[in-house]
Image 1: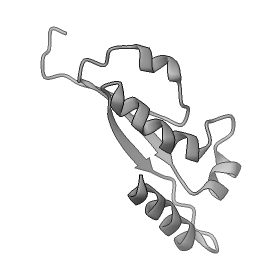
Image 2: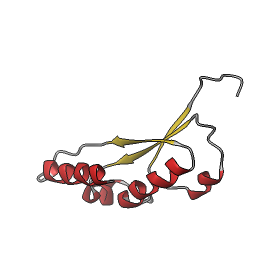
Image 3: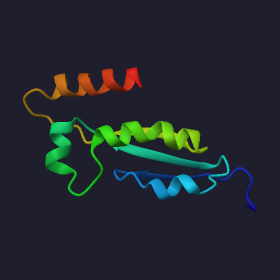
Image 4: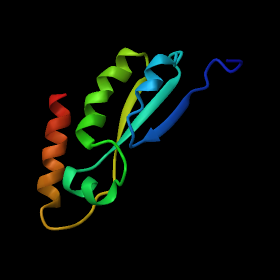
Length: 94
C-alpha cells in the first residue's frame, strides 16, 4: 500500500472462490490461463475446467479484480486451428 502505482498480478488455472472475499484494492490482476478443452483435458491435470475459468471471470470483475486471459499453450495437432477458433468465438460471446 506504500506504493500507490504498484499492482499485483498472478496467473492461475484454478478458480479459487475464496479470493472473491478479499479486497483487491483495484490493484490486483488475475489471469486465467486458457486453451481448447480437448488440450486442457490432457494437459491441465487437477485444475478447474476451462469453461469454469471463463465463467468465473465475471465474478472476479464484480469483486474488483482486473481480469485477463492467457492463451497458451498452443499445441499443434490436427484440428488445433478449429479448436482455438471455437475458444476465441466463445470468449467473444462472454
